[in-house]
Length: 50
Image 1 (cartoon, rainbow, N blue to C red):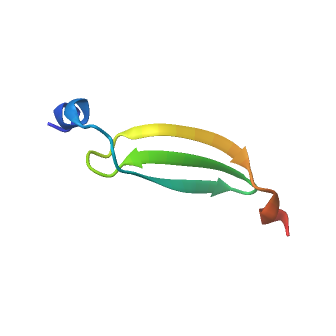
Image 2 (cartoon, rainbow, N blue to C red):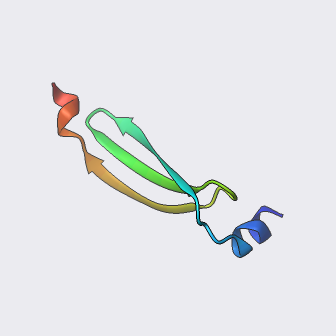
């Protein structure tokens, strides 16, 4: 059922969140309606070092 919902969803509304590992992070963007992961990327947060 979830796969069908994701297939026909327009993904108009999304939210983003980050998961941190020391100074590195992975940011995920998901659709609010169906929960499908739309994109993700890895980065390095300079502000975490202090």
